[in-house]
Amino acid sequence: MRWHFDEEGVLRYLLRGVGVIAVLMIVACPRPITDQNYVLSVSPPSTNLFVTESARLTATLRDGDGNPVSTEFTWESANTAVATVDASGMVQAVGVGSTTVEVSARGEVASATVVVAEDNGQSLSVTPAAANLFVDATQRLTATLKDRNGNTIPSTPEWTSNNAAVATVDGTGLVRGVGAGSATVQARVGNLTDQANVNVSVRPNSVVFVGAGDIASCTSGGDELTANLLDGIAGTVYTLGDNAYPDGSQADYENCYDRSWGRHKSRTRPVPGNHEFFTFRGAGYFGYFGDAAGDPTKGYYSYDLGYWHILALNSSGDVSAGSVQEQWVRADLAANTNRCTLAYFHHPLFSSGPHGHEMSATRMRPIWQALYDAGADVVLSAHDHTYERFAPQTPAGVLDMSRGIRQFIVGTGGAANYEFGEIIPNSEVRSSPTRGVLKLTLYPDRYDWQFVPAGSSFTDKGSASCH
Image (cartoon, rainbow, N blue to C red; front, side, top):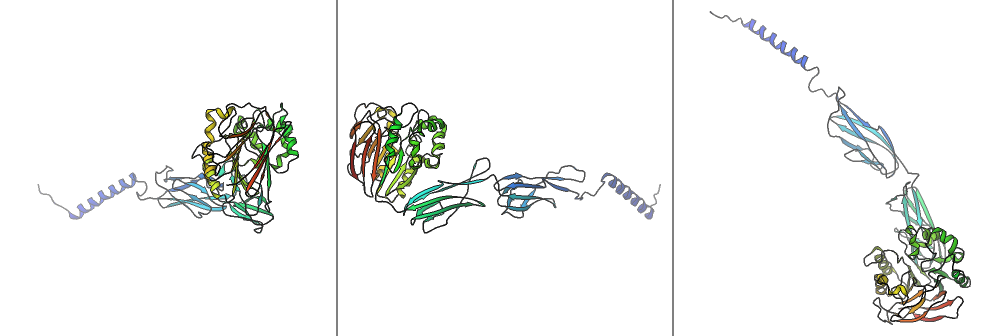
């Protein structure tokens, strides 16, 4: 058999086959394989934030049938001074204003509006709210920014003084007295402000520092006797801890302490004792004294009185070598330019009373070492309900008449007296039972001491020069 090829017929046949294949392809592929019919959306389309708050935006890419498409998204904020956004869509509010946050994927773009406002729940507070300085003395103010939930927000306040001829302030909140008068020192964070009133006076030639520890209970009545002594002595009042028995609670302060020593509250610079912390975190003590007790998270502070630098310390806190408080003491003393220095706190390093013979009696040695290294002159303590004066000595208890620290124990504010045990070295004068206050007259280069008794004839007095 011979085949005959009709070239035109073959061509027509092939074309018909191609047409069938094309029809089949169209039936199998309802749209071109390069179709970009994507829909990109972002949720929520708008969000309102306060400064420092954050919120997550969510992007979704879907195909023409509404099915989610897995892909990577690119995020961008039009104004990073208002809000920033990271690769996961987390928006962080930075400053007041509005911005557009865009997300893109596979050629599609969607956006959300972000509006940032100042948080009305935020608060800025300056502590202390008032400061009394002498010319050339300094006082550090602290500005704390908190959110509406009471959480502290890191911030860098802007400090200003409205009267630089009276007081100046640097970028860290350190105020310096320049001339006699009054000034207002303000801290600003964003649109929030708070201020402290600063009064500056010329240093007197001498000042009086008077007080005691182990003071008030609602049963003993001894605090009334010592409070009566304070009525006749002008000057700054100190407390040496265990101010309100039995627990240092709000009720103990209001019902026991306030009725006696409380009438001198406005001129009192206190420190806490161990009984203050029988109430959780010393809430009764810090609530009663307020700014005068310093930062309630610390319980220690310092100030200048006349020509003296004074450190009020928390011996119930961590006082170990290298602790935050011990390092603060060293830094504070390093910045001190006054010749004479005094520190006061509840627990004594040396005592012939019952507490002085406990194993824990040496816990204050690191603080003493910091004070000794800086040339401090006087330490006041209590804890033992006695009066005891020591000769100047080193932290190791070695007599040192040239650089040693003189310690007084004045646990005589009103609580029941203790008896002495074995008398330890360098103890010069002791008395128990007795109640009274220790009056110190502080001069630019020396000090006088006088124990003023309540209901007894015992007294102790003397003078010494600063190092």
